[in-house]
Length: 272
Image (tube, rainbow, N blue to C red; front, side, top):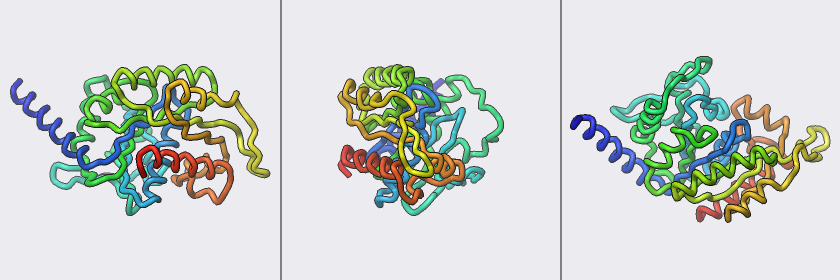
């Protein structure tokens, strides 16, 4: 028992030391799956890196880690430096850690109960060699389960959360539950992103509403949080994600403009 307590204390100290070197620690959350949370996390991280900020992206969605594929590094393997893991360096300013980069078979389901998931999250937080970062984004699974709860409880001085939703009422209901979760943990909601706000015609660039609009902005007002913007559905954007490229590689259009505006508002909230 004493050995276990000593080991847990050592792990908590390692997490505190690693996180002390990170200026902004941001949890990207969603109330339900399929709303584009990973898209927002990946593109916010890419935007901060493109702005010259040292940025890390930690994918804590153990059952569906997608960040590596969306950044074009699926199949890569992280290396160890002594007892530490070296995150995968996507470019000069962006580093990534994910279960998908630790040898997990992407075609095999991860069937873990809560304690093992908690242990895996804490292990990643305490062992990844991020160094000094301006931003660390945590791409969490949907809902308010073990992974998100563990990250929120063990990371000292979390800057806050970005909440991702789509305009439908069912998605907004789930987003409100995530907001309630954040409030219960005294976690600040930095902003709300409304994804899939409309469909962008590939030929003419016109945007057509798919669902009733304005839900994300309304939710932000309810929560007293910043509204970071709306991101429309764009077939070109979907193709980019599948091929491992970010939305910033779009040549032009409403989706690119929306993502740039979202990133700019987010930087303002965090003081640059």
